[in-house]
Image 1 (cartoon, rainbow, N blue to C red):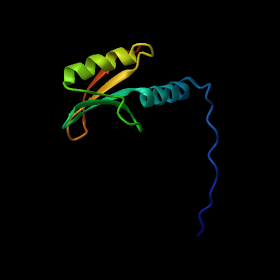
Image 2: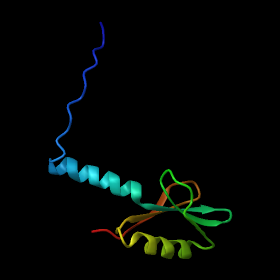
Image 3: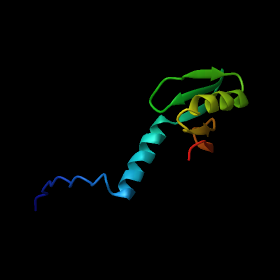
Length: 92
């Protein structure tokens, strides 16, 4: 028995559900994440180096709020082991 490879059909990006999903993924990739480090708290985006380092969690949250305001992005606060502790949504 052989396995045949068949390409998937291209999805209709005009479909409201698919469009909503794609937009959510794109927005999530732009969101800022706050991680605790030995030197303080870092603010970064997925796949990028730290944008800023702050001495306290509260300072990091406030700076991240300012950075996200123009695009109304989400902020994810992580625990030391990487889990998401809290999500702050500034979007619609």
